[in-house]
Length: 590
Image 1: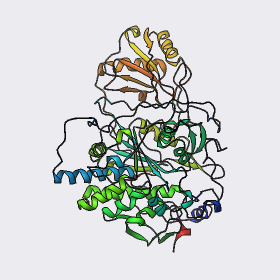
Image 2: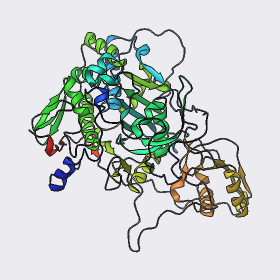
Image 3: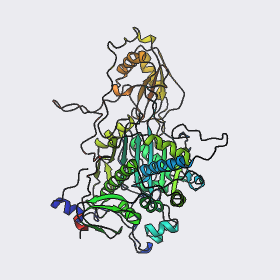
Image 4: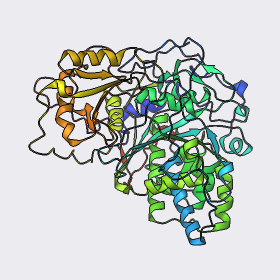
């Protein structure tokens, strides 16, 4: 972790945090009437500040237009292919196996949820009905899931959401703001967990709640309400029909297809922290944040119960007093919890565990692909394969907006991080370089007319419809270049990056010949186990033009950028780093 310096500039930033517009009215106990006006963008259609334009589209008007929506499905039905359907009766598991299942289920939820607004805790019997379910994607169009690599392995992307809901007695007691009971909750913590295809690494990327984005048009599955596309802070996307709209917003911002979501509220965090005997955290000075109630002495402390919740919710106490420091504190907490669970936990009392599980699963909402303890346990079996040192937690590179009332993705650096996740490159920068190709490489077909290419239109995303006739136009360009067997397909696709996939190693040279004709970079040519022949999917990054858009060229004499290395602005924290210590806001010491 790279702590913020404690110089004059830092102190000035701390004093001016409130002036920048960081709104804490959601976190105190003041009556609604006594608070300042809601932050811009909190209501559907509100927000005059423009969203950051993606590399592929212009920001839409704040008020949106049009009616109706066609929510797409497409989510996976299981995390690891485990059978979730009917079958023969299952005998109860032996007690030792039940405890083992319980511990790994705890690991699953802790990795997924710790550091958001609360923690779920699952037991293997009788708890499935406690888990609330929601639709995965509420936008007009769902991005296609990532394709398997040459070995048939597929990455997994899970969106972790922390809800500030006060819609239960427990959440009101823990979260305060009693006047907020009944209002639609905000997703004040958002993290994307990327599990690599070979399960050798895990990258967790946070986005600050105040990030200004395009929120696509979403349809509430409960009552059919259509929320028009608008610009606003990303935490308000949850109010547009539920977590499925936040999923759509992440896909539009990052281009990363989301396979599952897990959302929790305040109620579970106290139970989990107590169950494992507390979680070690560190601050470089005495800290006191009256807003959250956190009060700790300098050095390492073990937080448990409500104090753990205070740590996860504290923002004024850390760094510049904004949500950005809070995200780092959550990363530190998550890493410490994972290290504890991997080293062996104290989760052994079956009666206490059952009571904890009963309480905590009621705080959990997931998509239908993760709607049972068995499916979460299957996910745990995948997460446990990742070495602690290959777990990386980071915050999206960002900049303050003009005036400082919200943040924006940092141009260039944020897209580089998103691209790494889309290409299944770990954010720790420690992936092995791609294996060298066989030498000599297979020769391409002597005549381009002998190379068959199927072209598909994948230009649509959650906030932009597909470009009509795009596949036919590119197929015509290929035919003009001599690839007379190029043909447009009708199968609908939706993905951010243009990809030319080939299924057999012998087709590699032919694929590169096609790529060269269209100006595609090497990174767009991929070997996929489920590809048949050559299939070119035109993504949202190539919505117009006959040749692929050229990327920015480096300055004369400069080294070309390393697409597989994280930008210097990425504040990554590794899972095996037990020395991390939060920098305390100078205004919050005692």
